[in-house]
Structure formats: structure tokens, C-alpha cells
Length: 295
Image 1 (cartoon, rainbow, N blue to C red):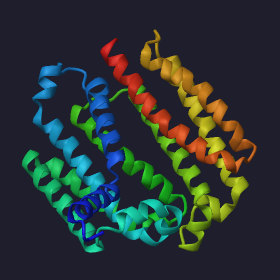
Image 2: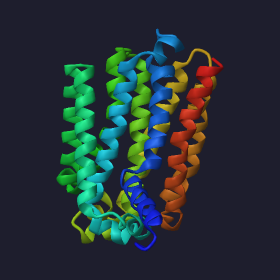
Image 3: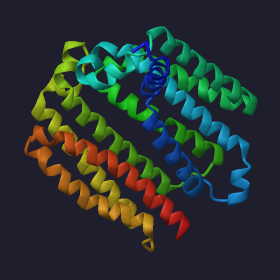
């Protein structure tokens, strides 16, 4: 393969992009822009938003930090991923480990430089974020329950940053944050069920391999049921239903549908269940976008 330098270089670039989780980054960028403009931003018009360099800087730094987080997480989970994700690991093998580490350091340094230019507070925000991402990969990812809560919290950390930036706090946004937290937690818990055996081999203390399959299914069902309650409260908080509120109405029935294979311990359907939950996160962003365009 090295006899074809162009193909080899492209393979190396693909390895790096997969390590940084490029597809997740694209979805994350889209989600952060949509939620920032249509949910957190209540005063600026589109023109002011477009020329608000701090917003774009924060989003760009968030994307770089998550890319760096994907790389360092891959570094710590490399042996585990060889078993649980052999195809992706094979694609990433075109690039030497040292280049992944160089990329990780570069992404973090660029993030800190940009955030320092924006403001000292933003610099502190990303210093904390980068430390927590590294500490999660280094230590917290193997601690029971803490691993799930930390992973979901770190996934939502940039959204919290945009909320603080705009200082737009409300009861409804608080409920939506709980909804998203529980939805992301459901996805992470199901992932632990699917990787139960591999996690056990490499010393990851998850609910699935510590308490067993049935208990983990019961906990997942409980989290989904809590989200059904949260969805109901969100719908009730709307005096008049709009496009985005219908997302939560449909979510109630969507969760009731997906809770059935979990309560009946159908592990063979968990792969489809987790992907449907992932798609549902994206569907929520689309509903938010259309609600902003057609209020």
C-alpha cells in the first residue's frame, strides 16, 4: 500500500478523522448552532448572530476539544476497540500512535489559544473541559456509574457554556436539559450492555457487568420511564403546541415503543434500539430547526 503514496496519505487522513470521530463532530456542530440560535439566543437577529465572533469561537473551540477528546479516548481504549470495533480500529491503524498524540496536543493548544483571545473566562471554561475529558479517559471511564454520568455531562458541557454565555435560563430549558441528559444516558447504558463482555475483560466497571443483564435492563427502563414523565411535563408547559413541542409529544409514544424490547430482555434487538435513540436525538434537532424557521 505504501507503493501508492496518494492512497496511503488518504488512508492516514481517514485514520485521523475516524479517531477524531468526524461524523459525530459534524452532527455536534450542526446541533450546537441550531440550539444556540433558536433556543439560547432570544435577542440577537440573524445578522448579529452571524457577526458574533465569540459565539463562533466558542463553537469552534468546542468542536476542537471534542475532536481531541475522541483521539485521547481512542488512545486509552485502543485494546478494547480492537475487539469491540475491529473495522474502525483497522482503518485507524494506517496512522502511527505518535501522530494521534501530536494531533491531540495540537487541537488542545489551538483551542486554548483561541479561547484566550476571546476572553479569560472562556479560556478557563475550556481548560476545565479539556482536563475533565482527559481525566474521564484516564480514570473515570472505569468507575461504576461515575463513567456514565461523566460521559453524558461532558457531552452536554458545551451546551451549558452557550447557555451561560447568553444567560438565558428558564424552567422550560431546564426541563429540556434533563430530557437530553436522560436520553444520552439511555444510549450510554445500552452501549454498556452491548459491550458487556469486552468491558469486563479490560476492567471497565459498568452496570451491565457488575449487576448483570436483568438489573441493567431494569435501570435502562427506569431512565426511559423518567424521560416519559419529563416529556409529559414539557408538553404540559406549552400553553400552545408548536412544532418543537410535538417532538416531545411523539417522544412519549416513541419511548413507550422502545421500552418493550428492554423490559422483555431482547438483547438481539438492542443494536437497533440504541441506533433508534441516536437518530431520535438528531430528529429533535430537526424539529428545533423547523420550529425556528416556521414559529
